[in-house]
Image 1 (cartoon, rainbow, N blue to C red):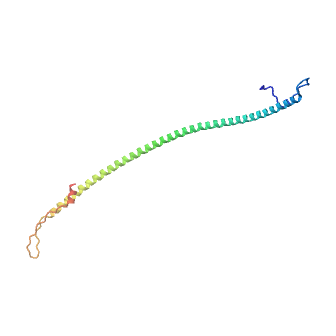
Image 2: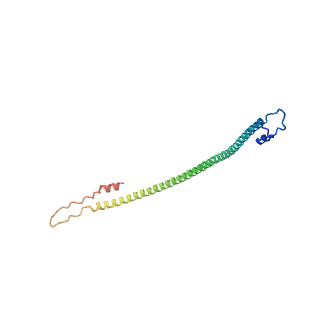
Length: 186
C-alpha cells in the first residue's frame, strides 16, 4: 500500500476496533496476537523506513557536498588553466622583450666595436704615418751625419813628432754600422 492518503501506524492497528462481536467470529486472542504481530512488524518497518530515509538524507547531503566540491574543483581547474595560459602568455611577452633588448644591446655593442675598430685603424694609420715621417727624418739626419763624417775624413797634413819623419796615412771613410744601414734603407 503506497497510497499517500492512507497511512496506517502501529498505534492505529493496536486501537482498531472490529465492532460488535459476531456469533461464530474469530478467536479474540488470536486476533489480538495477530494485531500485535502486525503492529510490531509495522513498527520495525517504520523504524527501518525512518533509518533509510535518514540515510537517504545523509546521502543526499553528501551528494550535494560532493557536487559542490566537484564544482569548486572544476572552477579551480578552469581558473588554473586560465592562469597557466596567462602566465605562459606573459612569459612569452617577457621573453620577446628580453630578446628585443638583447638584440638592441648586441647591435649597439657591435656598432660601438666597429666604431672602436675604425678609431683604432685611424690611430694605427696615424702612427704608421708618424713612424714613416720619423724614419724619413732620421734617415735624413743619418745621411747628413755620414756626409759630415765622410767630409771630415779627408787627408790632413802629416803631423810631426819629435824629429821623426813618419808618413801619416790618409783617413778612411767612416763605415756605416749594419743596424744603421738597415734603418736608412727602410
